[in-house]
Image 1 (spheres, rainbow, N blue to C red):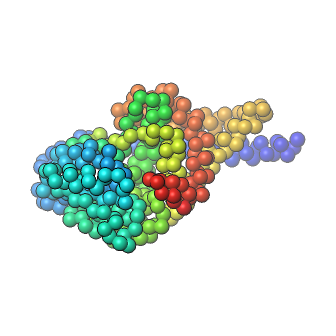
Image 2 (image 1 turned 180 degrees about the horizontal axis):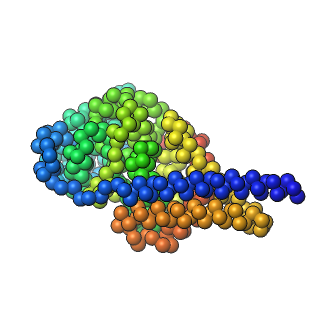
Image 3 (image 1 turned 90 degrees about the vertical axis):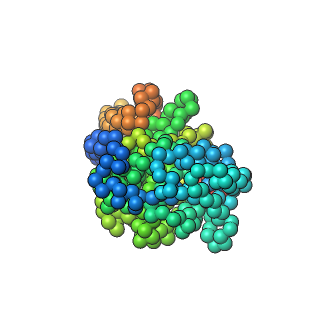
Length: 396
């Protein structure tokens, strides 16, 4: 009996301490998110030194594509319609051994586009490798402009996407890296609404952590960085063996080289949108792919944050089981659950309002929070294994 009391005491203290730490972490990030500037950017021509700045702000838009013939026409049309000087813009699509008509779609669009569009095939460059990092490295080697902007083949971008990046760079010319918001396009189903909520949390934490000077997450569907800065940190060489992480490992390396060299662009014009995963299986595969890179993080603060979040969710899950049959466990476990639910709901509402997804507030937020605990434990454990399938390939 005494052993049971000691176990309850130690577990309760551990769980309550973790939940208190987590609430403080999310509270700080929520406040940092609120402080991020959201003022609509003025035209570039009205900014001091804008004319000389515009000479340097030229973008090569990079897209790695594997079996994306159906999605690419919409993205290419969006990029071609940018309110950005066409002479300062090029598009490079790298075909990663597609088995469909991806290459033909790009070639057809390039023949009639008003903007420069180039197609590269990994198959034409022996030794270049396969996968997204190989595709991006090949594109970077052939890019003509000092800045690259990266998005995914299945995304959609607004007409002022590149302009919003350029306006930020005019204000802060010392930056080397820009991260932008990514939002999911729901299809009206409850499953898609849950994904919108989950994804909003990831975007918000990444943006707020960067604002606090503690960069951890970003999304390769919406990035821009200097080619020279990429080369200075060795490109993807330090983590080329990790299939995922072309975005976050680069952010960490650039920040380590020069703290303060990256920023999040919090403006609706900078938002990239993509579809929600159609099935639970597809969703889990994608999240396991993302989680697989956690063990390769080199920054102790990022590792500690990931470990702390995993341990809290594991503790909440483990504690919920005996709390059902042992009333003595119920109070501390319920308090820890309540603290997490409260701070997460507050934070998610901030991000969803920015995205204009107010219809996903309320029941979708609460429902996802209840599912989030077992989801994090499952994905975390599968991610540690480092094995998954992606784009028809087995990794790990």
